[in-house]
Image (tube, rainbow, N blue to C red; front, side):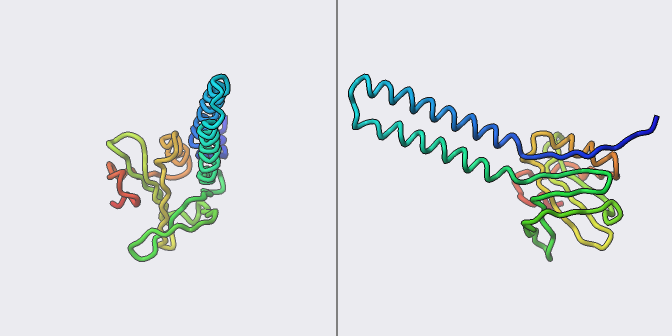
Length: 169
């Protein structure tokens, strides 16, 4: 039986789910308060639940805007949005979908926080360019590393300071 490698895409779905739950809770609380205020005939105070409903909707909209980042691991290579390129000593957001074929990739490295979940992914290319991808916002970051290991050797760089945005080594 032949080992067939698939295509895996990981999105920031958790943030969207939290936004929907937060919006729903704020709107439900606003409706309950509005009903109570109408029963009490306190029509002037209906501004408060209206503001809660608006805050809940804004929370949902802001949560959706952060759900664009993704990483795809396929037999062709790695494709990701949210990658940062190393320019000099700084990491600069590329703001575009980056595609790396397996022939371009020299190696892949990652760091962990307290020896647990992977937090920072480094993609080192054959031409010397380096790229960084932040895995902290992905609930299943360990699965991303497991999928990468199907194609390349992923060197574990050990613990990193998760408060440092670049997770410098």
